[in-house]
Length: 249
Image 1: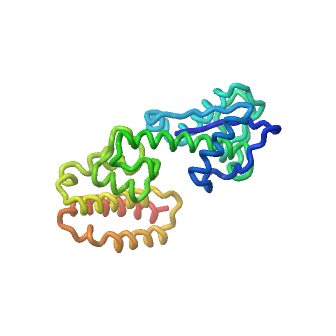
Image 2: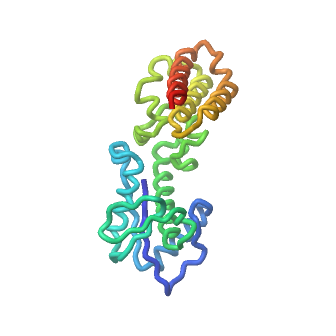
Image 3: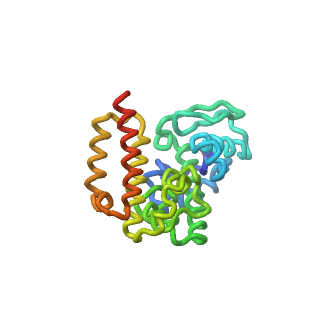
């Protein structure tokens, strides 16, 4: 989990700063270099995989933000934070929803954080090229889930990442590795989607049933496969429990 803090110099403008999510990686790289050259002060910090697993990703993000602010060579009078929550800081702090798109200094900090994060994922790709970290940057994309379904997690996957939690709890022991690869990947994807659906807070029962029907259509091949019957039972049990909770709500 990466975070950055930036104090911009009004006399040395950085043109082109914008919401980091809409900028191409190449453009972020150009802007990051300009921010580092022209800012009064900047710092990048992170929270480790172990800290994310220990504290949860939200608290780890606040920890990384605090470290970034504290690492600035010039102490700020006030910190503007992207989002709804502020970490504990030695200065005043203000949370700003969509701050990344609204304020240049927050945009600059977000660009630095994403640039450093992407560079780290590229370095990890050199160690674990089979997972495609250089492309999906660790997000739960279809490609990433397919690689996990084929290979299982590696040492740098955080254990609180929901597609990895499947393996932690031994839901795929024995029977998973014995499956044909194509069915193994599809069965894994079904369980991941079911777990995500069950964990979605505030989802109405009607919407839950709609998504359940979609899963049944999309993964009809897995549901009909004899070799996947054990995994299908796990999925059905998860969905039954989630449906019962929503019916009581």
